[in-house]
Length: 123
Image (tube, rainbow, N blue to C red; front, side, top):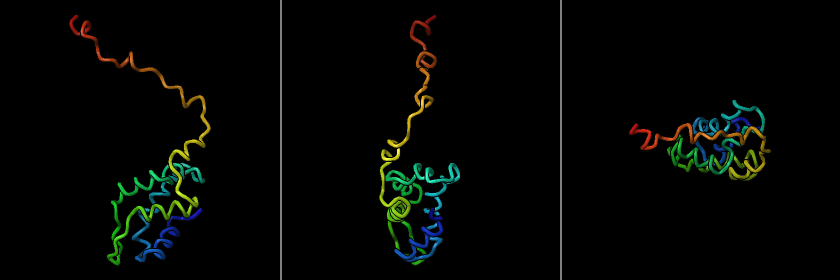
């Protein structure tokens, strides 16, 4: 499994600049290793929606130390492709999750949280 530093080195080879120009984005993609330290951590951000989320967090472009401006999306796409070989959708990840009974045990809250009826308010 690649370290964010190695992804950043790869970015430097592609677009110039320094490791520090890219490390925050690559660290963000791999921060989910704090939740589960195996390949499953990638389900949280290693997909198309995660790449767009990175744009929301880091902005649509990155200004490198060389003053070159590149799309943040390029960096996210590079990271995901290096780890997975392609860019999946979130749906690609979800369809591989085996449903467990506890996942569908939602309680009905409508009666408990429904606003009072007009008859109840008038009383």
